[in-house]
Structure formats: C-alpha cells, structure tokens
Length: 257
Image 1 (cartoon, helix red, strand yellow):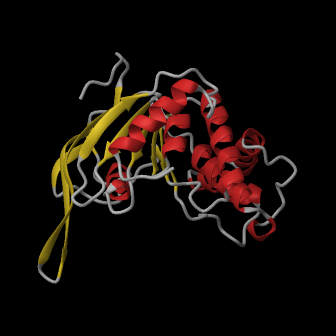
Image 2 (image 1 turned 90 degrees about the vertical axis):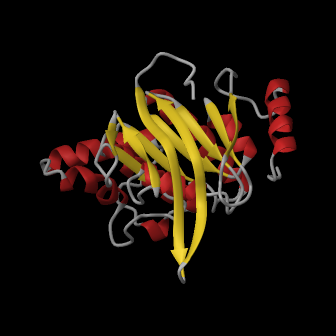
C-alpha cells in the first residue's frame, strides 16, 4: 500500500492474518492485512465491533502474534512489547493507589532515572495534558476524561516513537469525548509521534486521522477502503468537506454516526 509521502516507514503489516482456536475450531479474525504507517503519521483503524480492529492493534503492540504474515516496526519484526511503543487503552489503566504525579512518573522510574528527573518528566506531561494542579490527586478524585489524560500522559512520559490508542474515549460522554479529541489533536501537534488510533466513530476518525483504514464489518476483518483526510487542522465538524467525507464513509460501512 502506498503511504502517500516519502517519510520513513515506522509500522508495516505484511500479509497479516490472525485466527483463534476454540474447542478445536478455527475462528478467522483478520485476513490479508497490508498496512504501512510512516513516521509522524496518524492512521485511524475504523470499523464496527467484531471487525478485528483491536486484534490488529494488539499485534502492532506486540501483545499478539500473527498467524501468518508479520508486523514490522522500523524494519524489525515485532516479537513482543517494547519501550518504543506507548499504549492507551479504552479502560482507564491507572493505579488507584498512586497520585497523578506518581502514575505518570512510573515509566521513567522503571527505566532507572533519578527521582527528580522522573518528577520533572511527569510535571511536563501533566502540564501538556492540562492537569496542572492535580499532581497530588488520586484517580478516584478525577473525572473519566481526566483519568484518560493521565493515561495519555503516562504513555508519552516514556518518550515512545509510536503511540497506540485503542478506542481511548469510548467510555466518555459525548461532550467530554469531543473535548478529548480536541486535546489529543493539540497534544500531537506539539509532541510529534507516529500514531495508530482504533475507533468505531466516524467523526472521531475524520477529526484525528491523516488516513483512515476502514475494515469490513464482519469476521474475518479485511481492509475495505483507505481514505486520505486532506483537511486543514484544527478541523471543524461542521465543515462541508468534513461532512462530505463523513457521508461517503457512512454509505460504505455498517457504522452509524
């Protein structure tokens, strides 16, 4: 698949298929996935439930292995999780017994950095995600959107080359979700990363993505179509070009707005 620019290839899925086995029966989940994501590109994997998008995400993250084919990062085959990849899940993956500062400083701490440097890094990302003043707060004192900001900051505090986000705003109410989409777009304009973002929300895909890879709506998941999103940033949900692209994607998928 053509990437559309001459930047360095960061993520490649080459002939990837994935099957699970239950009670001796094969369940094909993904079939013939070929994707190239280049440096500093934000690619959205868009599809309804049961289309295999989270399984694809987990293979890129090194949490699952392809049945056939391979996943490459920087030209090397992915064999397991690595520090070069930061992951943000749909569920709020924060430690309830740690403060915001301690949650975000955890990655640098595990890398063996001095405590003062860990806290400096954490404070930088706390300010970046808009949580300044909440350094000493515990997760139970935070809203859902704030918890997910902690998750994003913690993933980025390890300075990964790649950020993987699996429906990170799926549990939020509509207003908070839009706010988090806007915040994510702002943060990624500042902190350049290669991003693979999984969602079942068309508006979210168009608002965030440089390209959108649409998966078919039934197993095994197959690549249905690729859309390049040539819209200026920051994007406007009411812009005519935005609405036209949303209509095209809606007509070709099983997704609803």
